[in-house]
Structures are given as C-alpha cells and as structure tokens.
Image (cartoon, rainbow, N blue to C red):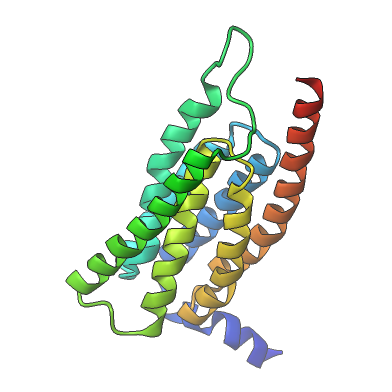
Length: 210
C-alpha cells in the first residue's frame, strides 16, 4: 500500500503546503466548472476563472509554459464565454446550444494549427523544447484551445475536444508529478462524456420544438 501511495504522492514531499493546498482548491473549482458546463449553467465561467487563475500561478512557478498558457487562455475565453452565454438573441432567449457551422469548423482548424506554431515558438524561445513532454504539451494545448473556443460559443462539439484532451492529460500529468491534477482530468473525462450526451439531448429537443 505504501508503494502505491508513494507512486502517486511522493513528489509532494518537496512541495510547499501552500502550493499543494492551492492545487487542491484549483482542482475543486475545476470540477465545479466542468460540472456546471455539463448542466449548461452560467456558473461554468466564474468557477473556471478561479481555477485557472490559481493554475496560471502554479504552472508559471513550475515552468510548465504550455499548461500555463492553456489556463491563461481559459481565463480570457471564460470572460468571452460569459458574455456569449448571457447575450440575448432576442427579447427572451440567450445564445442556445448549437452545432458548428462550416465557417466555424474552418476557424477551429485555424486555431488548432496556429496554436501548435505559437506554443512551439514559445518553447523554443525559452529553450524548453528538450523533452517529449513538450511535444505532447503542444498538441494538448491546441486541442484545449479549440475546445474552449467552442464551449465559449456554446457549440456541442466542444465536448469531443475535451474528451480527447482529458484522456491525454491523465497520464501526462501523472508523469509530470501532479497527481491531483491527473485525477482531475480523469474525472473530467467522464463528466465530458455525460456533458456531450446531455447537450446532445438538449440540442435535439430544441430542434424538435423550433
């Protein structure tokens, strides 16, 4: 039992109590944010912003630039998404759940590849392109950038990007030594699957009544 515990948590012996506490708080608010997103509730954004602010601080301190940029981007897109979700499309209705248009799909592809190039440049600039983790970080950053943009626009396809990104992040963060964050992404995977199903049901119901 002690060997299993050490495998998951031994690295925390070198962390300050403050950093461990902050990571746990960020994980809790991260779970709340994804749960509210599944429920199609506006609280996805304020809870997510708390989580991302904490993670930006921790990841900058740990010199994980790709992950830090993901969370900084989340914070910015949360403000944008908060506006989109509460913007009224007429006198009584706010922006509904919908599928991506052809134009939005092209934009998503552009965001993906632009992010790959941007993160690569950042890693090379700071001489961090020295390990296979940097390659995976670059890919997951691009996946999550697209997912967050689609979620901010209330597009159902956002969940597909979250599922793929979460599945990659579980072993990645475990390898990096951030067990609590790895557990977070493990939980995120299941919530994202159910979130997709819930949004699909909501979208189908909207299409039937429109």
